[in-house]
Length: 231
Image (cartoon, rainbow, N blue to C red; front, side, top):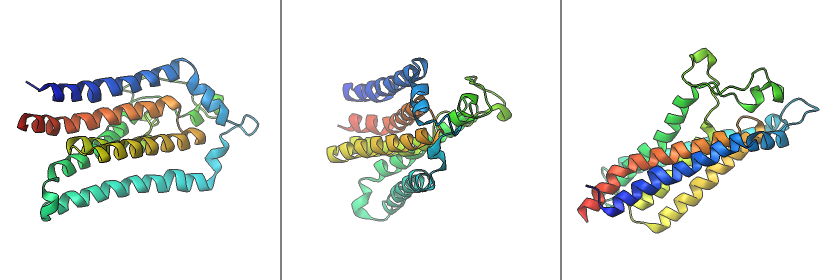
């Protein structure tokens, strides 16, 4: 039976936090906040999202930002391999390998979800100069998939939240706080870029945060519970 601390970890990180993010995402869509934000960035006179054509934003906010998230994952992967041979890293081997898996798990789930639902991107909607009607169907054929929901780019930024969980598992408060700050900052900055470009609604990004957080919590749960049993 899980100890109270382990049960609290699961309650907070696998239920309450992702549940709150999912609720916020649902409210953003149902209240019209999604459309209000998209309207702000849409230029009716031009029939599109001006930020979509900003070369510098695409380069820095999309491509380089995505590469930076990959670089962090590769650095953690390298450290995990190094822990097999470097004595001073051996004590962190479990945390490092769990972080590698946690950083990848959420974005991979998001990619899978994008391919089985019909939610369109804002720039694909007729309202915003596109060709599609609004849709929310799930488990659609590949040809009908919107490939937009949840946000893959946001998931890449939020994947850095795994560093928070690494700090939790390592009992390192500085890493916890830094990981939380870095993960949230990257996730919301990545989200803002794609919202401005017309690629995603606010709710798409909040759902990505919920999925990534939930996945990281589940990946780290066995390690956290094992550590609690050992204490």
